Length: 242
Ligand SMILES: C[S@@+](CC[C@H](N)C(=O)[O-])C[C@H]1O[C@@H](n2cnc3c(N)ncnc32)[C@H](O)[C@@H]1O
Image (cartoon, rainbow, N blue to C red; front, top):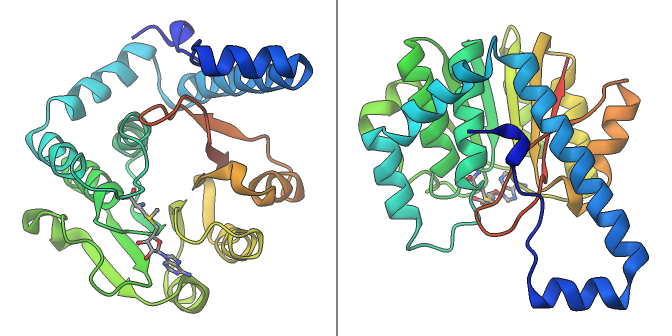
């Protein structure tokens, strides 16, 4: 995989018409995507010793039976899951950094949950705590990965502070539940102090509002991005490193 060849947009009729109608905003959008692409590449170079190492983890997950089964199952559902290639990168980061404690908010069918658990299982180390308001969330999580999983039913507003108080630290946090400014900001603030130095705060759908960027500024961290292109091209998955 050549990181420099990552696409940053689709050149189709609809986008061309949009660009002709409003060239200034099209140029701004293009510059934003270009900047985010560079920050994605920087993240990969920061986390992995070499690009080949990153590619080896990507290859591992792409060829994994459980990963392919969940991809197949989710393709028939309207699940709002984190895009596949983004999950491949998150999987690779977990494989490389070997976190002990991972938290995610927003489970739905358990697509992201399965990729996280799969990486922890391959590491032979780590636990995942997942919070979702739907007590039946996680239906697709394979039984043989559940021994590393604690599912907490309830709102993240209520359950996250309790969980955080009961954990010694957090290595990696992923937000993918309620994407309002207040909710995202609340979660980032709740979890940040418990994240270890060098640990990760990650958020999907960062363009729903400015919470991720305001928080990055508040804690003095430059945002990184992960490429997401299953349904659309873009880099709307943000990463902060503590
Ligand atoms: C986009 S889906 C999560 C998708 C999942 N991360 C994946 O990649 O497969 C969002 C989930 O957030 C849950 N949710 C919505 N509001 C919530 C809240 N206030 N607290 C906890 N979970 C919430 C929903 O029940 C839903 O399952």
